[in-house]
Length: 331
Image 1 (spheres, rainbow, N blue to C red):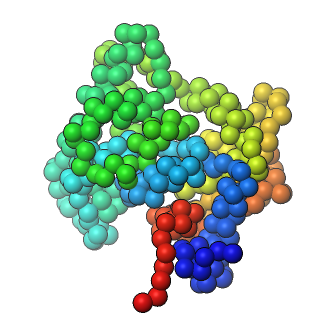
Image 2: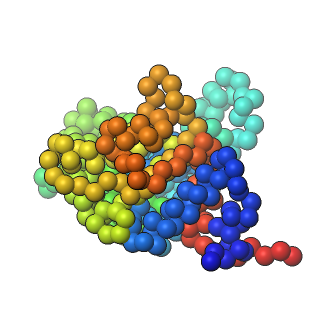
Image 3: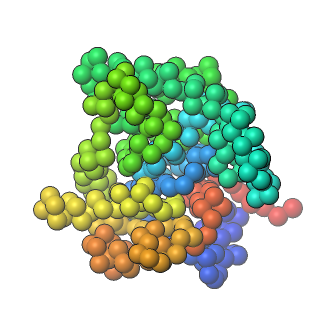
């Protein structure tokens, strides 16, 4: 019996229809999946790290409620940017009323706006850049190659940035992932600030592009990780925040193992997507889970949920319900 004073108990008291019911049902199924011995992959699009998703995502990783992550290059780097430059971020709640001149002023102040918050270039990009560049160059000298996330793991575990922390380390999901050596895939990493910086150093001849493992190698890595993580209980679940490549890439691993490697593979054991994308013009991000059945990514038995809402609101609610950290009492 669920504690009625928990967040999950609150869900059961209040949420009965529409997106509220989808959130409640998806959360209950998420919890059951874990309780039955399954594991969970989180696919994270958008700018969730800049939205401080780490406040709830980091403890989910720490408490072994999440076992793998697929994210954009922006989410990967912005987790560490928040850690080193938190106090220099600026909030712009009135961004909807900005003029072009307002945004040019932000540019001239050395900020890069993401909706209602801005990332400070000097305190974030330029603090991390020389440290990660050192690792890229060392890898080249040693003839070594690593994935994008592995370079970040090296930095975070070496404590080279520790004296520069401005954010709460407990809110940095990437730091928690590094501690656990959590499997991560970052499809399209080149589409990120540090990915662009890396390309610039390669073009300038300072670093060889061969020090960075590729997206194809990420899929090869995911083949092995998926087979391992899907062994227990109901298998590996798929919890998708937003749309785009961070979700499209990892969900393909199941049919690829089956049809391309011609090996047996368990289907995804759970699926939930939080998105406001619409099904139009072949939009995969807005496609209903049923369409994924036709691509052999899900089956008719897979628990499936689509929550058509704002992930910055819904995901923290779901994570806190799973963590069960708070007792809600009437006073």
